[in-house]
Length: 534
Image (tube, rainbow, N blue to C red; front, side):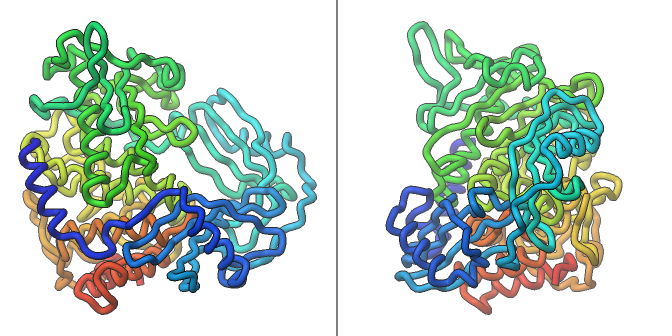
């Protein structure tokens, strides 16, 4: 595994372009922050800035040519503006553009006619499950709709029939009491339970030597660590699960009889994802702060009935950890490399564009994780888990054809009985599970990377792989495709991104990296059209 990875590292490095690895990314750049704030003052119309708006830096990317992309979260009279984030793009202090979804400088009155208790009741009634905890996080300006409105943000924790283990964000109109939007902060691997194989073979991995033995801690990757949940429900152990230890530094036995086996898979998956982001995009850790993440294996999830081991999840800020289910009678423990890459990419998305988890943005959020999880699998290039464009095909205890999977990127709906969308519908996605609305973006990425080419082991015709009859769609390769997507995600996407904006922003990313009118630029346009995003 290591030798294959090194060869791939060299190939990736050889293909770097001038803008593919930013000279700087993170928050601590006072000069860029000052310049971007000046531009917000002088170009307020472009940013839809209202008189009492204020801005706080979420992320900064500075290209090698000095172009700065400063991402701001917005407040209005101290209230968070949900969907009000903006990226200011400039070079040498000169304004270039602003990326945002907010379309007006109109702001609502801040006098609520409904109480927080009213909003709590509305959210609780809508939740449709077993409540563990519910409360108001206060007033916000909800700006993901046609016009900004005053709303309450309600946090609901429990088990819902739709989402299973849930830590929900609800937004309830403070004047009408209507539920405006909702999504789960826990981003799981699939809409239904999943699991994963332990058959990566014997692999080397970094651990930490301590008095009397070893810890499953990786000091070379931000001290990320792996812990045993002891089969308990994740909600009860994520703060208390202990770091795993061993006396001889030989972890597991390639079988489920030893928890250390699945822990080794998780530990390697985290390390591989770290190396992928560092090598390909010069990103140091999920939050680009050099800090590793905590992983808890051997856990169960509440799921509207008996707890299940068939799932995996990324728990975002302030928790920032990975959880891996212990498996079920149908699925192995959920510790595959593509699952790790998928879930941790939710963290990258949260740290950058912060895509919401509903409507078009929710589908693009899930697609980003599918795309990068797949690219992590190709990066690992492990013969025991041959890279492909199927999501979770290794999780099934019985999969004789190798074609059973959660999703296919080339024909997403064919993997799950048509629940995932292959093509973008005439209207935007509203109320569709993000695992299914991710389909058009996954499909786009496959066509961008590979073209209308039948994947190995299948028998699709070119016309079955496109939505518009354009069977001549040609791929530009995985490396260029992943660089375009990552740049769009981290530099241009905003929290309320639509598919139409994603088309425009990936075209801008292709322009930045390869030039307007380049082969890559034209391929992006053609691949989006091939999934009905025009």
